[in-house]
Length: 252
Length: 255
Image (cartoon, rainbow over all chains, first blue to last red; front, top):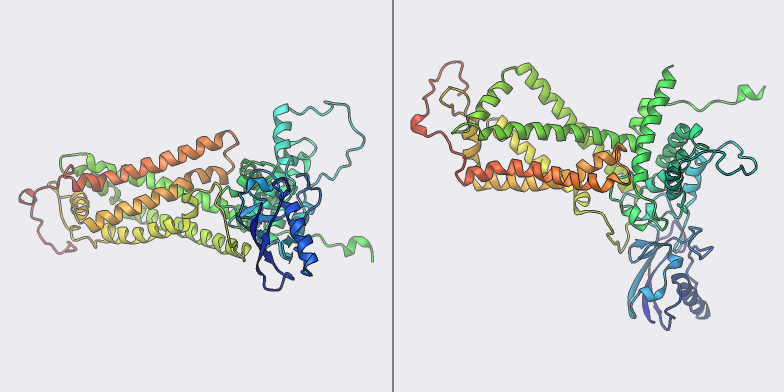
C-alpha cells in the first residue's frame, strides 16, 4: 500500500515545528501503524535523514505509551491505541496527518514525542493507597458487590495514555483524573483517603495547566480503554462533597 | 533545631475559595447560575403564556400589573437576575481563557467525534442571546417600544398590545425567533450539562438526561415562539383603537 504522510517534525520543544511530506510506498497492509513508521524510519535513516521520533513501548495496546494524533484523532481511528491500528484500516493512496498530542501541559520533546510527566505528578498528588496491602487475602475477605467491582474496573482500565486530554478541545485531563479518582474511591481500600485524594489530584491537575471540562465528551470517544465520561460526573460530585467536608473540618 | 520545628505544614488556603477557584468549582458556579437562569426562563415563559388569557390578551396585563405591584421586590429580583447573569458570563469567560491557554497549539487536522453542534457553539449562542436580551429589555421594559404607552379597558398598561404590535414588525419577530433558536441550542447543551457538572447522572441515566434536556429546551422555545407566530397570524388580537379609553394626561403620567 502507498500513503502520503504529513509528519510533524520538531527538533526540540522550544523550536518551531512543521510538517514534513513523506511518501510511504510499498507498505504491507498487515503492518501496524507503528511498524509502518518503523519502515519509514529505516528508509529515512538509509537516506541519511533523521528518523521520526515517536513514543512506543509494549505495542500490545496496554502500556499507553503511544501518543500519535492520526488525522486529527488521538490514538487514531477506531477504539484502541495507535499500535493496535493496522494499515489495512486506510485506503491505498490516503494522505495521513501525524501530529503529536497537542496539550499545553504535554510539551513536545521532539517530533511526535510529548512529555506526559504532568500525569505522573497528578498521580503523585493522591492517586494511590497509602496503606500497605500485605499478602494476598482470601477471596471475598473484603466484600465488594460485583457491580461496584465491575464499575471500578471500568475506570481502572485507564492506561494513562493522555488521549483524552489530547482530544479535548480544552486540553482537559478530567477523564484521566476522574478514572483514577473513581476506581480508587469506589473500593473499600481507597475510601479512607477518598476526600484527600480528589482534592489533591484536582488541585494538581489545575496547577499543571490542564483545561476545564465543557462536556464535549470527545475524551470518551477516543479513550482506548473505553472509560465512560460518567466518571467525570462522579468526580464533580465527589470533589464538591470533599470540599464541603474540608470546609466543615477547617472550621471545627 | 529539631526536625519538627523545621517542617512547615503547607499553608491551608481558605477551603471555600480553593473550591470556587478550582476548575470544578468554576463549573459548579456556571452550573448553578445557569440553573437559576433556566428557572427564570421557565417563570418568564409561564408569565408570557398568560397572553392567551382573555379576548385581547388581558391576562398578561393583569400579570404585569401584579409583577409591578411591589417595586422594591421587582428591583431586588431584577438586581439578583443581573448578578446571576454577570456571574454566569464572567465565570464562563474565565473558563474560556483558561481553556485557550491549555491548548496553545491547535491541530492542523482535527476530527470531530461525538461533540454536538450545541456544545461547539456555546459561546456564540450565548453572545447572540445576550445581545438579544439587551435589545429585549430596552424594548419592553425600558419603554423603547413605540407601543409602550397603551392602556386597556380596565386602565391597565396594555402589555398585550405592545407585544403583539411589536411582533407585526418582521425585523422584531425575526430577531426574536433567531434568538430563540440560539437559546434553544444553548439550553440543549446547558440543561443536560448541569446534571453532568453536579454529578447527578450515572452511566445509565446519561442518555435519558441528554435526550430529556433536548426535549425540555425545545419545548420551552416552542412555547416562546408561539407568541410571535400567533401575533403575526392574527390569532392574538389587539384591542381595537375605537374601544380603547383615552387616558388623560396628568402630572403623574410619564407621557
